[in-house]
Length: 269
Image 1 (tube, rainbow, N blue to C red):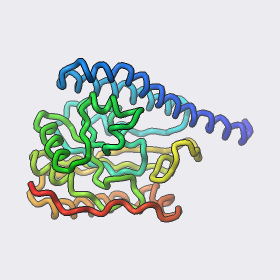
Image 2 (image 1 turned 60 degrees about the vertical axis):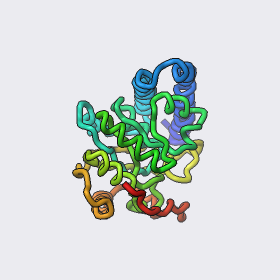
Image 3 (image 1 turned 120 degrees about the horizontal axis):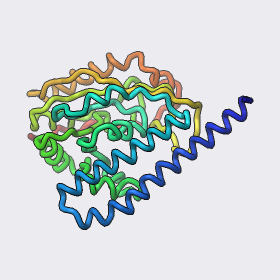
């Protein structure tokens, strides 16, 4: 097959994947909005999380089918029937949360408030009782309550997608939540060879396909007693694990991106 034709087919597949994601989300919203009004919080949460898992799993399957991604997500099977943990992945791509949520219905994602109000994913996220990242004290309270019920809280310690290699400065919320809930922090190491859907990359901009994308289990840290000491140790661990990650090549090669937010003072326990 000529190279130009292969490129054209991949570009068409990329835009098709965006359409598939939008259709999945909008169809689920048709169900989620009335359920949000009708179901009590417990049943709504279970229904919402299963619906999102099913939709995201279909989307991930479509990426494989169209040959856009070479995915290695086998490590996420370890989440099933596992204990309550704070999941702490690095965050190179917009698609990271989708990949994780597609594998375990107990995951409650900490999301930016702007995403909770997003027309595509907001209604489903609210039905699933995902956690708003602001205000900070309320986020910590809801995350701790989720963990004490045996759930899994997904929180990206970088606070935003990676803009400098090997990772951004870490935010303290992951340590505070783990300390208050007395649960471990399970790190996930995400590696990808493509800047597609990275910080500043428009979803409508295509790139080289297929994308190689892998998630592996990292170290599991016990619940910390000293949050500052823990965050320093977590930072050293991520930097050591990501020193040779493939994304470092394109992060370092592109122009300086928007700087991530500076860590603020730690909220009191």
